[in-house]
Length: 69
Image (cartoon, rainbow, N blue to C red; front, side, top):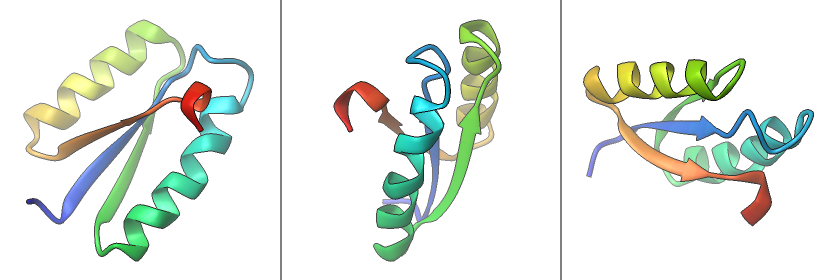
């Protein structure tokens, strides 16, 4: 398992909900020893582009949606 991980935040779940849900998730991952980078796009297309770039760069994805928080 990699020690670097990217937390992809859903930009379409509602104003600020994704970012608020990402904060405790990132904290848990950091406490577990991961180096966490959070990716939040301005919209769905921007988020997809950023996610593709992060994965191509070699970081491991861990998906989190505010709807499941």
